[in-house]
Image 1 (cartoon, helix red, strand yellow):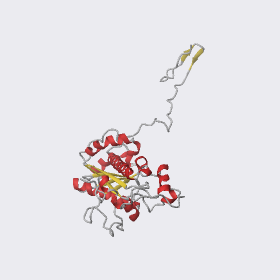
Image 2 (tube, one colour):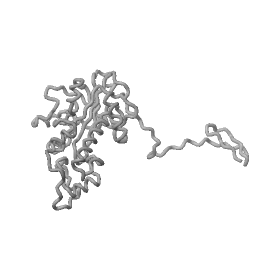
Image 3 (cartoon, helix red, strand yellow):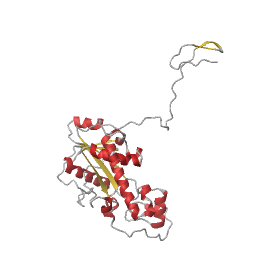
Image 4 (cartoon, one colour):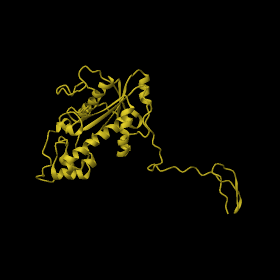
Amino acid sequence: MTSVVDQDSPQPVRTDDGPETLRRPTPPRRRAANGAAKQRRSPTLRQERALLTNGARLVAGMDEVGRGALAGPVSVGVVVVDAATRTAPQGLTDSKLLTPAAREAMVPQLQRWGVAWAVGHAGPAEIDAHGIVAALRLAGRRALAQVRRTCGDVDVVLLDGSHDWLSRGDVDLFEAAALDPMGPDAPEPGVRTLVKADLQCSSVAAASVLAKVERDGLLVRLARQYPAFAWDQNKGYSAPAHLDALRRHGPTPQHRRSWNLRALADDEVSSPEPATPAATPAATLDAGLAGTTPDGMMAP
């Protein structure tokens, strides 16, 4: 019988089969990169607290969802924190890493956690009219306008990604259509972009969860009007069932018609069947059904 060497000690060990030998400890086995080996790092308030320490009174985390969808709105969540805000609810992370059930269970906690929260939307007609970047800005500023009513002006916004799509540029994309819900006299918040902010910053992760749950709920309700497109499952993204319905029925008023839907759906149907129900103005984004006002704000 052979003795087992102590893994924590390189001391010689006598075996029954021969003289003393020096056996090195076996190094711990590295777990596979694609397995469940890496422990998920939870987001923190480190970035937010640094901004608050440097003079900000209110810091908002902001994230978008629905940017790459073929149908439905683009939605932007915002969660405001201040110096008194405590550590975020346990289990919070980027919404894409949570199951639908976990996201929905976390919503009431997140709504109580921050100083204020909101989700703004820009509908498909607005995306078609102004482009996706301007629509993101519109949705984000709608969300900011709502939290402004609750807590006042936000000093700094932490934005997920590397591009500031929230601030007004030199050319005001909203001026001609008078779309900016913040109004001309509202002070512009400072914007800090941070790649993977939804994995690092609690306020941004919270905003991503709230935006995801609200937009998903909206697409589930719209799916009842347009069941052929399976929006309750694909949430307006280019899943096979969605593309197949586009081939058979053509786009609905909830589709982003300025996008190349024909190519995406590989349109081979010369005269598609009409989608049901009959077309309604897309700009309303089914406001009553979604629980929002026509300007994309949450109804009180």
